[in-house]
Amino acid sequence: MTSPVWHPFTQHGLDEPIPVVASAKGTILTTKDGRRIIDAISSWWVTTHGHAHPRITAAIAEQATQLDQIIFAGWTHEPAEQLARELVAMMGLPHVFYSDSGSTAVEVAVKMALGFWANQGQPRHRILVLDHGYHGDTIGAMSVGARGVFNQQYQPLLFDVGTLPCPSGDGQPTLDALDHACRHDAPAALLVEPLVLGAGGMHFYAPAILAEMRRICDRHGVPMIADEVMTGWGRTGTLLACEQAGIVPDLLCLSKGITGGSLPLAVTMASSAMFEAHRSPDRARMFFHSSSYTANPIACAAAVANLAVWRDEPVRDRIADLARRQGERLARIADRVHNPRQLGTITAFEVGAGEGYMSDLAPRLLAHFRDRDVLLRPLGDTVYVMPPYCITDAELDRVYAVIEEVLG
Ligand SMILES: *Cc1c(COP(=O)(O)O)cnc(C)c1O
Image 1 (cartoon, rainbow, N blue to C red):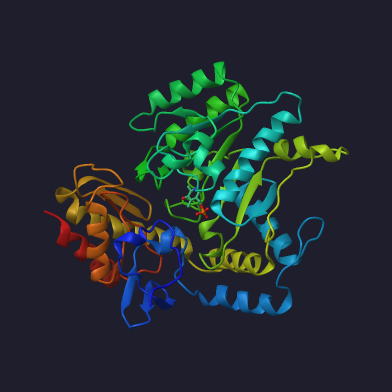
Image 2 (cartoon, helix red, strand yellow):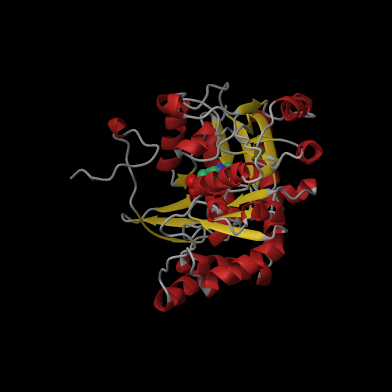
């Protein structure tokens, strides 16, 4: 019997097997037919502490019996209020706008930056972005992301942006291009993935470059948007990647790990300048954005529980320990791969000759890993390991063992 489900990023014409996952705990996914699969990519970068963390699942169950959903325009509830207070204390920005995915968090940030300028009577519309960036798959999020095979069909609809070279080395070409654009193009904002360009191929760059981008933006009064949808919640070794550069952006996008990877939720955190530019007795200057499930109470309760896990459990120690264990294993294969690299809990390397996302290698690798009960999903010939922080030594060894089978 064929399924009516149309899957994301899946070519149904290839008839590849689609495993049915029945349950998950920690790092292990169990399929309907009883296979135990190691989740080495945190279910596409969302699962931080491990699947079904007891504190988070309990909070979800409890909240579901109290208040399931409520309109958020002009109404509020305690989980959203508590989460916002705690996020402000943790992240260093004073305002929290809720939405429900990384893509919408980015769309909201871009709209806020445009509103910031429009409400001051100096409309600006040009967004500066980094080459190889990824910010989601809605039309706006695609517009600020790298152009490629993923969005070729929609290109005529994507809005024009200023693209800076992807930072590498000392980042000088990127910094020069940023300075030039700030002087000549009147940009509305710079949008970056801090330290890691994730879906664009796991490109890492130095905190000093991020810090210098912030300084250039400050010098020219250009707001900086940090998309920490992937890098947030400890992936790069610190709670936020921005911490490593000692910077706070004007707008900060968080999603994925905000609920520990249990329910969809996102926030766009904003500086007081962004908020004040929209605050006025004039209703025409309010921020015009909402989605039906904005600040869903059950998702907010899951996020509050996630913050409690961060507060009460040795999460930072686990992250440091995973970074060390990842580094050891990467070192063992480093001479058999191209460009081995690590940032915090993430390792990445190329196994082919840079054939790009549509290379034949990717589906073959995917099948190899799937057949060996390891969930890894290479980006073209770039293999990366980004597991939940609770992964055991034995599980991590198994992940690298199946990777070693494809090397050489
Ligand atoms: C995943 C991701 C997004 C999009 O998030 P969705 O929840 O999939 O919409 C945006 N930005 C970055 C950096 C991401 O990694």
